[in-house]
Length: 328
Image 1 (cartoon, rainbow, N blue to C red):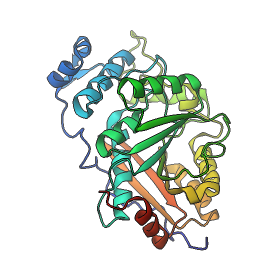
Image 2 (image 1 turned 120 degrees about the horizontal axis):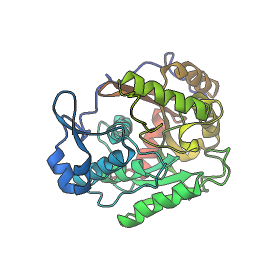
Image 3 (image 1 turned 30 degrees about the vertical axis):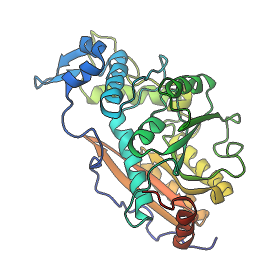
């Protein structure tokens, strides 16, 4: 494919604000959340401003908070993860999905395609299965989630089964731990989107150190209190890999070339701005057709995702006509 990527692929296309379709705008309705999950009431506290909140330093409180959010805002009745697995901050995960929906809509005269005709591949679905659950609830999309951890995959499958979503969400074990797309996709499968929340850190020590810095910055390092190393949990494969985030995403980009005919848009979260130059350099090497970077923000947290496609405008139109006809 000879199309040239943009001269400045790193230019952001959105102002970093919470997405307007994100259901997590404003303050949380804690009475509503406690009604959805009564156990959450035991973890209620007052923040320094005297407002109701929960103890975000307590992993059990964070898990119950997520249960309440999913039930009250998304109609997901049953959600659970085994102790020690990553408990995701839901507003940020939702923003990523809404940004991807806009990406598809931009190719479709501003109309976001909805329903099971849109198929999404979640790389590293995790025990929480959060992207498929949110994406199906908000847009009705169909998902395939891949995972290298068999125990995490079993936990994710329980979340799917307990909500009777087997027809909308399928899960698959990636048997080759060093591979991402290779040996995962089957002939004839096609995906409108791939998404990924890659491991941030280069080692377990880096992950622990980052968590301690976070507590210090938040002013929560109380010498009289033993705080968890990671209040949102996380197994090794969820938190770190050799070379860290940049290495993982560059490997994903390299592997994406081999399955370019099966995917419309590839994407990945990028937590560290400093990793973007290496990512753009890898994309330029493969001569992708288009690269988009979308900035996001939830409160003080800044993040972004990078998306790339090997299909030019005409090829994307043919893809829409073949797969999205009559869907909106």
